[in-house]
Length: 327
Image (cartoon, rainbow, N blue to C red; front, side, top):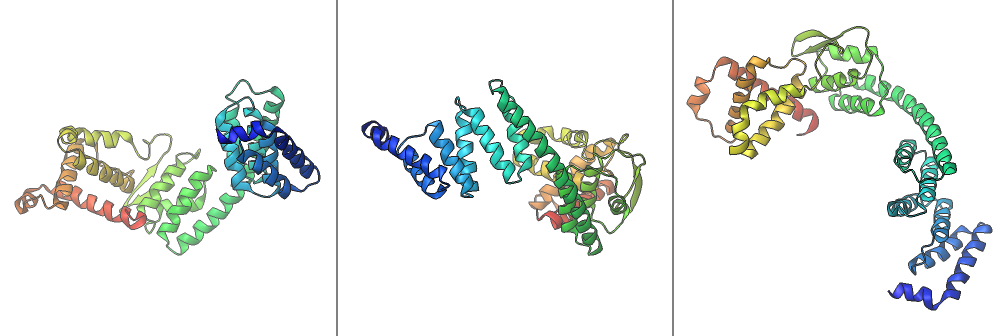
């Protein structure tokens, strides 16, 4: 209320400050102009002209983060000047080479049907330019990541390999590269890294199957014919046998769910067959209960060989996953 009274009581002060700010901008005195605009906004004057002038000053003074924050605040209001603020924000992001963010804000803005056609055209042009420049950047980044990945393989740096393969996935540039194929068949590559590579190859249009090795098992993997790298049917199939546990002990059930997901990530595509899902579910319960020392010694002695095998596999997956991702 106090801020509103200042504007009502001192209209000449407001008009005078706005004129000073406008003159300072015309004379390229952006520091001075910004101070005037700041005084106006601090006293509740937030007209479109004032906010636009303040944003221009911030851009000229390289106040990038502050300008972005202000733009986001103004856009969130979705008032009659929404289109204008979106255009300013997109321009600000474009000038900072934040092309993917430009595309995102434009895509969102174009869902609104009340944007004037001339601004729509400007936004579409900016979107196309951003798309082309982002693709160019991604291509350069892709080559750089492949080069660094090659070094990481030579140095046997598992964690760096994992990070770089995930970086390739994030870039969204999908190509059939011999380095990546060779990593899948190389026994020294960490199985978790190989799963990330399979996730990558799911997006590549392959003419030939891929050879993959994990835990001394080798096979050909055909993207077109194979199940998903991380098949939902596997986790749901195993957890189906633990429905009662979900209601009786939801905490234990959730622990088993996490362990099963890590198990799948380590061993895919060489996962237990459906006829063994119930035994794997039993092994998961056994493993969790043993972790809490809830298993009697005779229970371990009477466990079947296959169940013991699955428990050992679970132990291995937990160790391997944790060694790379500090879980």
